[in-house]
Amino acid sequence: MEIKKKDIRALTKEQLRDFFVKEGDKAFRGNQVYEWLWSKGAHTFEDMTNVSKETRQMLQDNFVINHIKVDQMQRSSDGTIKNAVRLHDGLIVESVLIPVKNRTTACVSSQVGCSLDCRFCATSRLKRMRNLNPDEIYDQVVAIDKESKLYHNRPLSNIVFMGMGEPLMNYNNVLKAIDKITSPEGLGMSPKRIVVSTSGVPKMIKKMADDEVKFKLAVSLHSAIDEIRTSIMPFNATFPLEDLREALEYWYEKTKNRITYEYVVWEGINDTKKDVEALIAFCKFAPSKVNLIEYNPIDDGEFQQASSKAIDMYVNMLETNHITVTVRRSRGKDIDAACGQLANKS
Ligand code: SF4
View 1: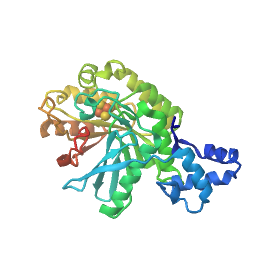
View 2 (view 1 turned 90 degrees about the vertical axis):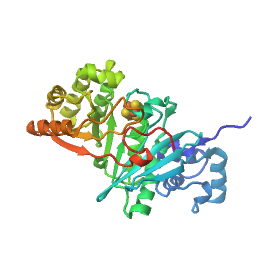
View 3 (view 1 turned 120 degrees about the vertical axis):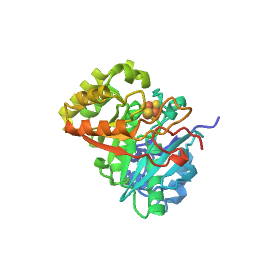
View 4 (view 1 turned 135 degrees about the horizontal axis):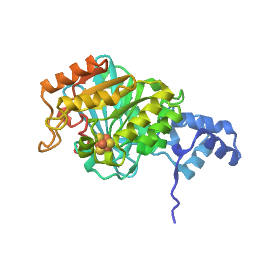
């Protein structure tokens, strides 16, 4: 019977050092191999040229190096790039490079499919198959960093966990991936340039606060009225707004970090004065920023972008109440790479 080899990148540096000691080698060998795996991005054991041939063979006998493969890359007329990424077991996720002025943002996936059921989101139609491993999240970022250098002549500057999946439903692996992304042995990026965007899982928001994470938090809110939010994000029935707000208050108490709300205004759903008043009442407890995101229809039109008059009303009322607001145009619409459109269609 063939023994299934373990992915070597699932080991921490300590575990790798211990492995070499057990094999009668020096712990230092673990550091060398770890550097090849993460800083130097080795795809094969053969690449590890300062490691002896025997050691490379021994690694080959015991482990595999699982790397993602960009199966298909699509480029939008606005410079946005969408990658269809094949995982070692053949499953596919998508990640997106979004270039704006002098920064490039990677929007990465955290699950294959999604555990949640937001009705306006194409990903919700894909059953959650599994969580991504830390290295699979990390590799998406590395691939986009390379594309950013190649097509936009600059390295990646920001990361948002806003692709496929709910990152807080794969919390441990997302945290491990961020550790690698921010570590000098990985990409050495500042955690302040990373945003984890959640649909609002109260227990996990509190856990993030307790863990004193250094990255930023964004919440996809879309309505501050329970009845409406439940109708568009059914899991709100399990995690109602009161629980979400309590968790966010806890987060703010502990971190003193401003909270960003992602918010789409849809015609006939959340485009009245009452909706804006509810939003203002919801987010006033802490310094907040509201990103009003342009909607990208995913099918026959149950959800339609609200009129510019409704958007102006949101902007005016939020500003009057000293809440920072930005209106975000979507990017990459022509390649189905815009917010809410990721559904492995390519
Ligand atoms: S919006 Fe995010 S959390 Fe909601 S179904 Fe889509 S991917 Fe999942």
